Image 1: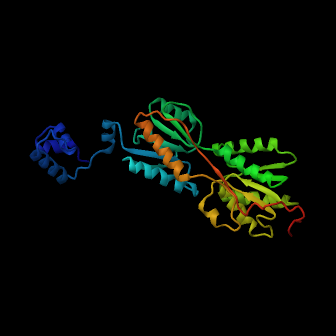
Image 2: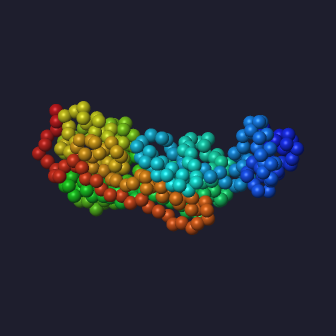
Image 3: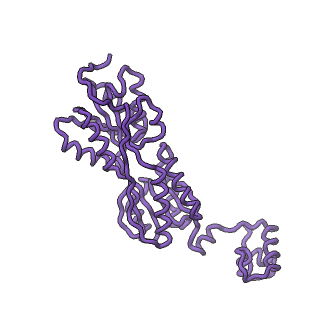
Length: 330
């Protein structure tokens, strides 16, 4: 690979003069600069981004780390991040997997947004101690170099479960997320608080996985145990859709035999019949705010932790009243 040392040797100038010319510095005359740039083109010189990053201590690139790329939430989240990054002169790269973690300690990026459970909290705190700038979307960490932009999971789960209780349901299934998931843990804490207050309600937890397959599996258990209309709170819309898909192949009906509510208000739910009741929040705003906060702490500004608020979207998947007289479909 051609280096600035090769250009300096051919041009008969110092390495610093080549560096000034390549960076458009006024310290080099126009004539000398033109000659150096011509030699650089002739030798097919390509700037070493890693070396430039080490010298300037910045790359103007932000990284967002995701557990995986599946799910409709990520698209809007990344759009919000990208819009803010581009407006502030930053580029955005999306990463996943253990090997990508080295981008932080090797300073290939100026900071990171974390929505990835493969990072342990201890690992992130270690990076923060080394002055790396981080925004977390999936955990609570206290450090001057870490900012939290968290979804109000507890409020959303409280809205969903209280809505089902208000409708008079006495048997409520809750399909949780994968073990170790921050979102699932926070939502389940809220569910249990509502359950402690609700009288004469039978609560059944089914272990899910935040995937359609988890909803399909939950549907099997619910149908096997069915004796009267029940309510189901899936802790995300992906599982709610999976449950609906499985129910659609039977004589059970959503909104009549199974009263269903999800969480996330992904676009697909708006076209479901009946319309899925769910918990809504702005994914785009969540991503935009995460990028804004990260850029601020990179520039040395003091920022407060932020929370993304949620609202309840009522839908036909939760009937207006419970019909106790319906028998189990054949």
